[in-house]
View 1 (cartoon, rainbow, N blue to C red):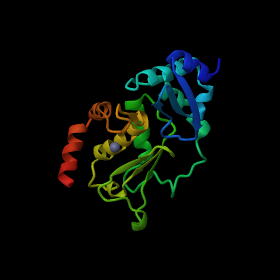
View 2: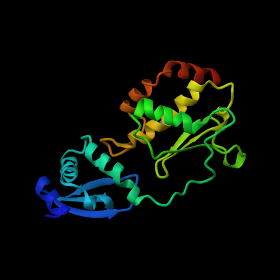
View 3: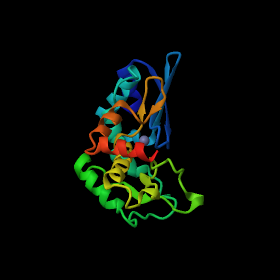
View 4: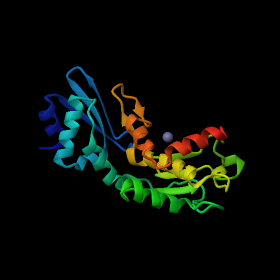
Length: 213
Ligand SMILES: [Zn+2]
């Protein structure tokens, strides 16, 4: 039986599937009359049965967590990734801090070495590309690139604070974007904040950030 057939049998609904190339919003659906209009990232055409069953559960109960769907997409997303479109140069080695070393250390300590496909770089110092001064870091979900504001590449900034900013962006990479019950997308979820507090120097980092603001 094909994907559509399995979903119809598991949900008891008529399902219309549209496949998309969307790499951020990988699954969404709306119900109209007796029909469920499902938009699926095309990678799910080849999803294994347990993942398809989870899609059916999600259709029946939109609030559930979807670890199998997320994990399947994470493991296969390289197949639908566009060739790297990272803007600007990748320069992880700064005057004071080497972001790649920081990333690798944090990856071992907090992520069990799982975040191996992340690119990290200092942002541009040139004004025309400059990130807003208050934006200390950013994460691009499409290119899986962390960009750190070069104002942090200074001997006056403690290592633990640079690590804290990098760690925050790594959490975005690890946790992705969650779907809320109201359909909105959430990034700084409760889970995110709990994980953030696990950072070894969390309190010091918060205090230091207050001092500079
Ligand atoms: Zn954030």
